[in-house]
Length: 236
View 1 (cartoon, rainbow, N blue to C red):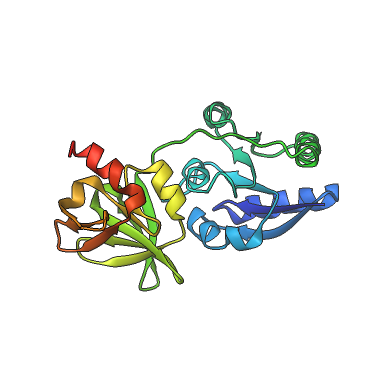
View 2 (cartoon, rainbow, N blue to C red):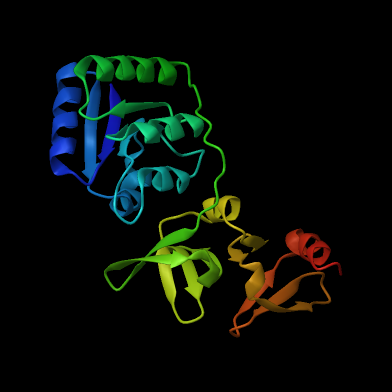
């Protein structure tokens, strides 16, 4: 049986879709989320096969949500929308399928059958890389959407991924891999990414490594593995 999550800011829409899936008997809904941010907090732990995602949601749209997920970990995506023009964009982004609201039972049954076949043959959907403009972060029980241009650097430790701006440090559910692939941030160390515009100085060490100094006074390591890329970038 397929494991699925529903992401839609309309409770009634989630309820109706969950009921239809239950009647089909081939897809178990293991979680429902009213917005993209809540989905990001839990999707890694749930490890589902498919996500049914509303396109139009406040703050972070369904399209933006899918783009924030690691391609290697992302489940199959079925967009659900009341607006036909978004269906075209969904196909351009190579989503697995789309459903128009109100969802027709026969159309849903066809989608679920195709999902089962795809997972049986381990089909992989390919959503092209798109640049992230906003980074969702958590700060004092609130969710903030940080403009990429305001980010100095990001790093990971045992407690997760942290986003540093000039004034504060916040936690994000996005992985360093996603941030590296879908933003202009550069990898300087296995655990660090830096925004190029935040770099004020590169200090070369005798052992072949280096330290980066940001415009706001932070010091970041540059491992030997990533040194050449930095030297080439600055034509050093």
